[in-house]
Structure formats: C-alpha cells, structure tokens
Image (cartoon, rainbow over all chains, first blue to last red; front, side):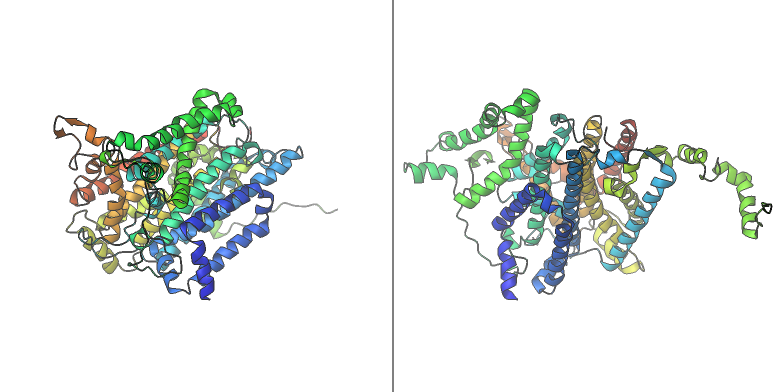
Length: 358
Length: 271
C-alpha cells in the first residue's frame, strides 16, 4: 500500500507532474484516433474515480481533497478530462466524415426545429437537473467558515481562491509583476485577439481537428495543460511555504527544500568568466537583457524568415507578430520552468534595484 | 361497412373548469394566444413572451443538441440567476462591517433553520466559474468565435473576467481567515503592477525630485483595497462591487451577448 502511495507521490512532483501532463497531452493530440476511443474515455474516468475513491482512505489525501472549497476542483478534473475527450471525439468523427467526402454531423442536422417545444424542454430539463445537483451539493456539504479574520495570524500556506492558483503557482517561476499582472493581462488580451489573428475560415460552427490543427493544439495546451493543470497542482500539491507535497504526504511545516537557485548573471560573471560581478546593474544584467530582447523581438523575426515563413505570408506582418508575441509569452512559462529544473536558474534578468526581475 | 360516427369526448369537471378558466378576461389578458400546439401558436408564444423572445422562433437542430452545445452557456446564465436570488436573500442577513460581517455569517449558520442559501451561493459561484470556462472551451472547439462572431467572443471574454472578479470579491465577505488571506495573496499582486504599484518595476522612476509619486498609500493596490491592507475599506469596496457594481456590468453585457448571438446568425453551425 505504501509503495503505491509513494508511487503516486513521486508522479505528483511538479517536474514529473508537468512533464507527464504535457506528455499525455502531446500523445492525446498526436494519437487522437486512440485517445477518442470510448474505452479510453470511460477508462480514464473510471481510473480517476478509483484514484479519488480509494485515495480518500488515506488521511492526508482526505484532508486536502475533502476541503470544502477544493471539491469543485475535483469536479473540474473530471469534467475537463471528459469534455477534452468528448470534443476531440466529435472532431475526429467529423474529420473522418470530411475525409470520406461526407458533410459534417452539424451540417446533416441543419434543418430547423421549433424553439417551442424542442429547445425550451431541453432548457427546462437542464435547469431542473442543475438545480437538483446544486441543492443536493448544498445540503451535503457545508460552506466553510474558519476562525474570524486576524491580520496578525498568517496561515501557512496562504492561498488565493482556487481559480487563481495557476497564477499563484507561476509565482514560483516569475516575480509578481509578471505572474500576477503582466501575464494575466496578456491571457485576457490573447483570448480577445483570437478571432482577429485566426484567419482560417474553416471549422466555423462544427467540431473538427484536421482543419484547425495549430489553433486547437495551442488553445488546448494553454487551457488544459498550463491553466488547469497548474490549478490542480497549486491546490492539491502545494503545502506550507509553497513546498511540494505529494497527495499522500503529510503537510510538514518543517519540510526543508534547498533553495539553490542562481541568477544568470552569476552564472556568466562568477562561474563562467570568473571575473566577479560588475558593479553597475546594466553591465551585470546585459547578457540577460539581450536574451530577453532576442526572445521578444528577435525570435519572431527569425520565425518569420524560417520555420513559420508560410504563416508569415498567410497572416501578414501585423497578425504574425502579434501572434508570435502572444505565443512566446505563453511559452515563457514552460521555458522558465525547464530552465529552473535543468539549471536551477532563478532570474534571467535580475535588477532588484528597480523591482525588475524576469 | 358500418358508418363511423364521431363522438365528442365527454367533458369532465376538469376540462370544463379549464375551458372556463382560459376564457376568462384575466387569463386572456395574460396569454394572448392558445396553447402552443399549432405552428402558428408556437411562433406566437416565442414572439409575445418577453423571456422566451431571447430565442429565435426556430433554430438549427444541432443548436438544441447537448452533443453540440453542452448547455454550458445556458447553465452559466441560470447559475447567475440563482446567485442573484440567493445573494439578495443573503443581503438581508449580512452587514459589511468589521463588527458584524463574521458574526452575521455565524448567525446565518446557527440561527436559520435548514438554511442552505449560503451553501447554494458559494457552490453556485464555484460552479458558475466552471460552466463559464467550459462554455468558452466549447465555443472555441466549434470555432464559433470566427466571423461574424468575433465581437461576441470578446464580450464573452470580458464576462469571463467579470465572473472571476465577482467570485473574488465575494470570497472576502465572510471575513474569516480563509477570506482575508486569500484576498491578501490575490491583491498583493497589484502592488507589483508596472509603474502603478509601489513595488512594481518602473514605479521608482515616477518621482518629482525626491518625492515619490507612487507609494504604498496611493498605488494600484491601495485603489483596490481602499487602504494599505485588507481592512474595513476593502470589505466595503468588495461588498459594493460584489452586490451592485459587477452584477450590473455583467447583466448589461449579458444583454449584449444574447442580442448579438441572435444578430450574428443564432447558435453557430456550418456555413
């Protein structure tokens, strides 16, 4: 039994967890013909149900999963997995129809029906089921109420509401100005920009994957892997001092994690050149600044000339550079994660004097 | 072959009273048409009812399929109505002051028999965040943001943000440890806003001589909290935003959203 718990604790480590989620995502998109099989979809749901059901026997697991405010996230895991599987399934089925030269399912169902009774009854049934679910949920589970607010007693860990825990998890890799302000703003801007930078006229109003490969892959990666899986990670696997704790691990306040993260400037001036840190911050951080400038401004140009030339020609310069900027901003998180895990990199640019750390 | 004779069904007391009721002036003043069992009345019922007229009269078959829509948009709207209703009831019992906020919630729990309004409000709010996300997910996967629906996708994104803000502002109101520390963690981000937060990059550049323009008592976080920490000012601000400001904003946007769904060609489908 303990071996099994240790096994899951190991897989819950942020590095393993994130790489595993990404790997599973890549596999699900790449071999979607396998992923969308009913046996896989139901199998995943059953596996999850067993995992949570049996996991509840463990006291530490029960403490974190059973927290009233965490219950919706358990629901979210099931729902998100189901709907990812389900929408991919619809898409693959439609792709097969398109390949055979048949119209997509939604096209077949294009004839019109009456709102009364066809639609209002569906709405009524959904409404009743939703009300029943909400009332049962409310009777079974009491809303949490802890000790009265006390500004002098900081709980450890202090967590934001669950839907912001992906952002709080980003704080491990970025400073608040990026993780808490700039990147969330870019998420909103990026979402709003989607209809204007996606010029592909296909796949409007029906499920398909083949006709929108890049769009769907990028969106799913952002929404399922980055946003949602980090929420799960931040909620269930982060304990006191934001240290990592496996789902079956006791939240020990005294757990020690060595903080051995090193800035890029230190790597270059001290360890690489061995000349000591330059006194002025501009010279000290110049290599990092150049790297960031290249990432933000240089890389899109390189992309436009080489690998993504086709997209550049299709989208035109404005759309292409906006897309590239948003895409690279999104990728900055996994890039920073990898740099942290591989090189213990703390900051690429570290200008503490101006609160400007990247 | 024997002649068939049509016999009028015998009218029971129930039918008689039903027929009488539907002929009264009161009934006829409310319902302008007969039961929607003929095509003509199906049109009339949708056109003449203010709630039903959010719908078109007829729509694509795929538009009524749960397979296609997942009903997530409809459920988000329904949850919003539930939250408005339960929220108004909660406002009867709750005063947003340091003195009363927590004890009012305790009172709600202890003194209202079989009360589940707070539970319905809290779980409904969590559920709404999830249904709004899944609605966006579905709209993306069906490519429904593509022309001519670009603008409505944007309205949706803003409503998604408002939903999160509604949930966030409501999180503070019970005034327990869970509440203030979650809001403290969340609002601490604001002090790192570039230029506008006193610990944000560039803020120290905004100075007149030796006088810093951006400091702890006038930066973005201060504007959010009405103070330098999560205290009385923050509670009142979040309460007003939660109960009045944000619901009004999202209600207006909902009207725009539903209107534009209709104007942009109804529920999306293949062109």
